[in-house]
Length: 226
Picture 1 (cartoon, rainbow, N blue to C red):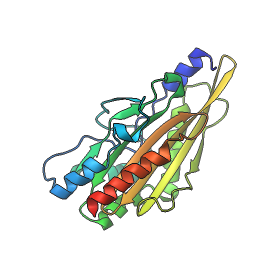
Picture 2: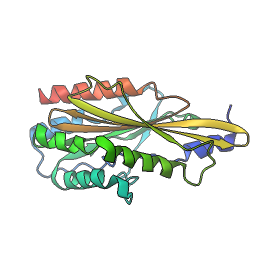
Picture 3: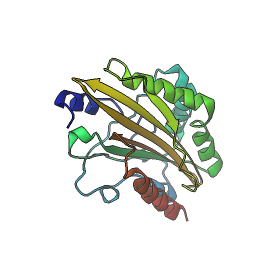
């Protein structure tokens, strides 16, 4: 069992949907197809373990704002927020705080596949890697750490949607003789003309529920667009 102060330290790390995808839905201008995508594209209680709890999400994910390394992603998000219907899920979490296990997501309904693909492209390449490297540094800032955090690509996303990209931050914290590693996963998936972003956290391993949650949402969005 981890020392209580270490458990609370880990739980307090700010990891709110840092993809900056999270935002309130906008009703004006939504077509019937848009509404179907937005309804299908958010995590629901049925997608997570029955014992998990949830709360209303914050209005936006601000973790990437102000980071110059994230300029490309921030620009893509700003443009999408201005022009495209979007919705976000509630913030779901394991009721045991020391597990630091959470899941949330957001979805955009773009006018066509090309526009959705352009949005997802902002999360690919060296610029995106630099962005998440910087975010990892911010996560660990001012907290006792066993070493610098690491960022790794999530490599098992083949066949998920029409295209997908993901990053995993691993930050190991120390306090009172104990250590624990917080894993933060970010995944962006294009499904036709929709883009769905996921953020997960868990202690000491990649969140085991993550793949099934992503699969459930992606399948619903694909069905909504069929």
